[in-house]
Length: 295
Image (cartoon, rainbow, N blue to C red; front, side):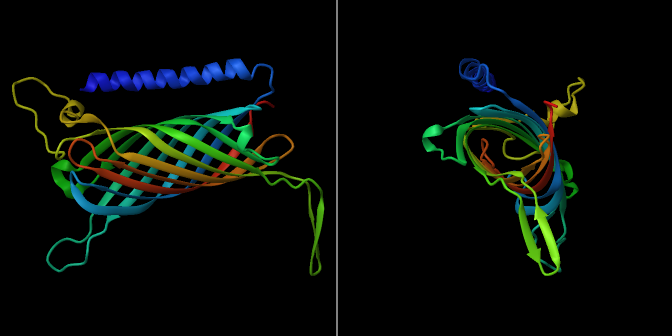
C-alpha cells in the first residue's frame, strides 16, 4: 500500500510544479517581477488530541517562526516557505484527589509549503484583486509526553494538496494628510499599504499514522534494530481527513520596496489514519520583515 501512495505523492508534486513552470513561461514573459525575502517571528497557540494515546485535549502557547521566498509578477505570485511552531501544552484534566491531574506535552510542528496563485480578472475590481491557485503543504509533528511512559514519543506526517483563494485590497494613502489632535499636528505621508485574506482548503489529504497505538516492540532475533525503524513499524499512509487554513495580513511598504507585515494565521486538521484519529488546531500572530531582493 505504501508504494502506490508514495508514487501518487510524487506524481502530484511533479504535476503541480510543472503546471507552475508552464504557466509562468507561457503568460508572463517580459513582465517585471519582484522577489521578496520574508523573515517572521511571533506567538502561537496550539491545541491537539491523539486518540492513539488519549482523548484528552492538550493546549498551550508557543513560539512561531517562518522564512519565505516570495516572487510577485503582474499576473501571479508564488511562495516557498518553512515555518516551525514550538509549543508547551497541558492536558485538560478535571481536578481530582484520586489521580494525577497534571500532564504536559511538548509539541514541535514543522510546515514546509509551496504556493502558486494566478490573478483572476473576472472577479477583481480596481483596488481589489482576486487570486486563485493551489498550495502544497507538508507537515511533520513531533510530540514528547513523559506521562505516557513507553509511548512518550509521538509523531505524525501530513501532505495536503489544497485549493488556495486570496483577496488583496489596496488601502494605500496616496496623498499627504494633516491630523490636528489637540496641540499636536500629525503629518501622514503617502504610504503603500495592502490588506489581504487567504483561505486554503484541502482537496487531497494524506497522513502517516500508527496503528491502534504507539506501543510496538520488534522481535528479538539477534539483529540490531534502529529506534526509528522500530517506531515507524506500524505506521501507514492514509488518504482521508481534512484540513483548512486561513490567513489575514496587513502589509506596509517603503519606496525602496522593503516593508513589514502583521499576520494572523489559523490552521485546523483532522487525520483519521487507519484506526485512531489525530486532531489539531493552531493560531499564530506573526510580524514579518519584507526584504526586497531586487535592490
